[in-house]
Image (cartoon, rainbow, N blue to C red; front, side, top):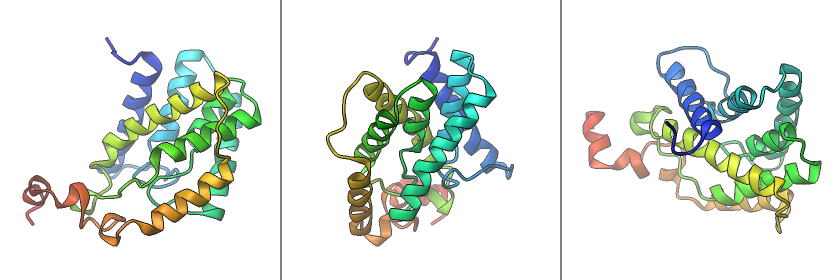
Length: 194
């Protein structure tokens, strides 16, 4: 029995499974990165399962997520698994307006400012696998807030600029180098033979 409810339970399960496939040298789609590849499909498949959503509506949600992801890539970066596209896609699937989609995406960025990228042993599986589960929770909460009518005070384009500025200020060893954060803990170093 799930403490978080069926949608979040399944989302986390599916999101983590994508990283398991990646770790076993299986084929995945980097969406937007290999380390964050489970968040979008995990959430979408869970919503499809729980709400009996058609493949056609899932495709529309993927177009929505792709548009938000494109804006993030064009105006900032996809490094560090940023974008907000997952929350926007969830709002689209649940019948939200374009404004609500952008509000949800903005909320996700706000909640993820300064995310450290610290793969243990240089591999994206850990701690990224756990962060994929947290990512779906973040996306679902942001979508829920937006669909409830809570307007995001800071527009998505301003959040993209802010996210990019914060990311550039993060010390180099905390940006996809495996030199800081979780990767530098004694347990991680011991496990990796460092």
